[in-house]
Image (cartoon, rainbow, N blue to C red; front, top):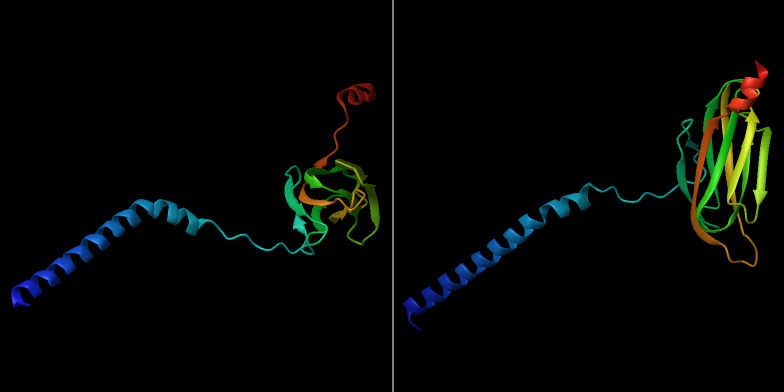
Length: 170
């Protein structure tokens, strides 16, 4: 093999490698926004079912429920003595029933609802004192062992008297 031919093969190999790397870099540059979006997307985090989710009055929070892993969820909200509050838990997806309980900061049950086929649980409670209140949702099997994981939404709103009741009181 002559030196010229060997040099030609080395130069050709180097050129082919440079072209391959260049094309790969071009493809990578085109995919950069998609790859950057994947890197910017937070990884799903494990849900600690015993850590209470803080609720902002009027803002719904959606959470998973599952008979094996997420079998209950805790929430908290802040209220003042004599406030009338409406606590609503809405079954969004899955196949399950649930228990809904509202307790005071001293763990005194203020209201509760339960139902194997309950889709919306609504409790209206009068808060006995200023402070933090607790809501607990426990999943229950609707029967025949056919429970399926899903999601639930919880929201706390202030109660407002209907307009007709307000007008009659004047």
